[in-house]
Image (tube, rainbow, N blue to C red; front, side, top):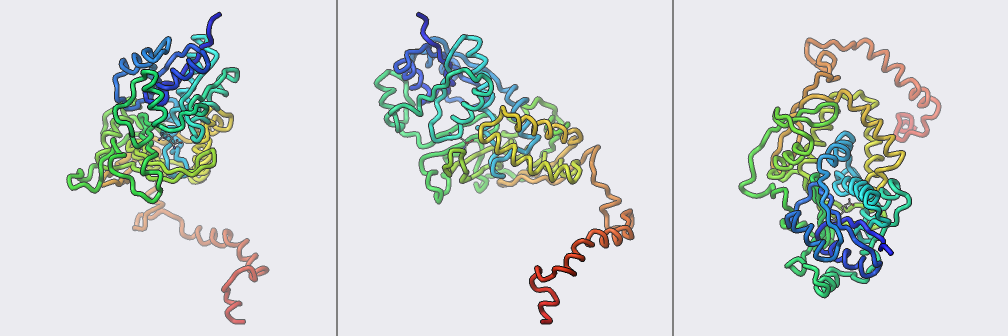
Amino acid sequence: MKKGTCILAYSGGLDTSVCIRWIIENYDLDVIACVVDVGQERVDTLDAIQQKALDIGAIQSLVLDVRDEFAQDYVALSLMTNGMYENKYPLVSALSRPLISKRLVALAKELDAEYIAHGCTGKGNDQVRFETSIAALDPDITILGPVREWELTSRDKAMDYAEKHGIPVPTTKVSPYSIDDNMTGRAIECGVLEDPNVAPPEDVYTITQDPKRVDAPDEEIVTLTFKEGLPVAINGQQMDLTALIEEMNAIAGPHGVGRIDMIENRLIGVKSREIYEAPGMMALITAHKALEELTLERETMHFKLGLEQQWSQLVYFGKWFSPLKLAIDAFMASTQRYVTGDVRLSLYRGNCVAVGRTSPYSLYDFGLATYDDSDQFNHTAAKGFMELYSLPIKVWSQVQSGALPNTRKDKIE
Ligand code: ARG
């Protein structure tokens, strides 16, 4: 009888390498390892990672380059939304999981596999994102989370298991951090970072440089061009979104832009401490917001701010493929029609600020805004407006002023 088949989301790291062997031993399944390339940094070549999975016992080992799809269908939505969980974290890991899930589900269909496995722990958000996304895309598939089940509760135990089964292990026995990364940035946790009172050591950072160092670069001005809510050029040079995000990381990283130290509320209820570095995303979102300030009508902008929060929470909580998230996507897209123009960013010693913006659709009207002689604002109309605008408050005050502390009346009595 044909054995069952399991598609494993494979990274080449210790946990998912152990997963291959563990699934074979404990579930008696054929394992197909699949690396989904969303722009993560690699210690090994893809060929070496592929071969490693086969050596450990996978019957097939695949690498899928989905960087462009990731940029265009996932990161782009987050840029238009200014996606930021708890107003602080640009959703790095949360953005990649739905796409990885989508690819695993497609592969399972294509290769007739009944199982999908991931290497997430039972304490994190990523298991939720994988399993909710997979359930949305294929409600019938069975999901395995070996790391949640096995008795290899510490990194050392996983190392011992690996050594016993001839699985190549990283040369350093104790790598202090757990890292997830993709083209939008890096997330770093564990080790000394688990004490929220300890400042992150410099060695957690690899794509940003210390803004305090003596040879930190001078101020750099970068012009970003946006078309309908998405960046399309840097300093006048057009490029596709994948290249643009990578280029923005390369420009903002040396200025130490995009370092984030955060205590965040995970979906499963635990507060955790995470360090992020997302130089490109933070710079792009700063620029995008600056252009929205110029081009979005007031009420749309205020409403959007609230929905940005809601969208970010849904995405962080693993609901990428959900009706509410899809509906908010449609709202976001409709707001971006006139978010077209140029923004000048100043990058300097950890700071990234917009210092100039222009748009053919700018709603900023000099004649209305100026305080000089060319003023066209109707000051007489303002007087009548004040009268009507404050009318309900006036009536309320006349009848119920007792609700107000320190009124004139209070003082007289
Ligand atoms: N806390 C982040 C999130 O939930 C990152 C998760 C992965 N982090 C890691 N260092 N392995 O999106």
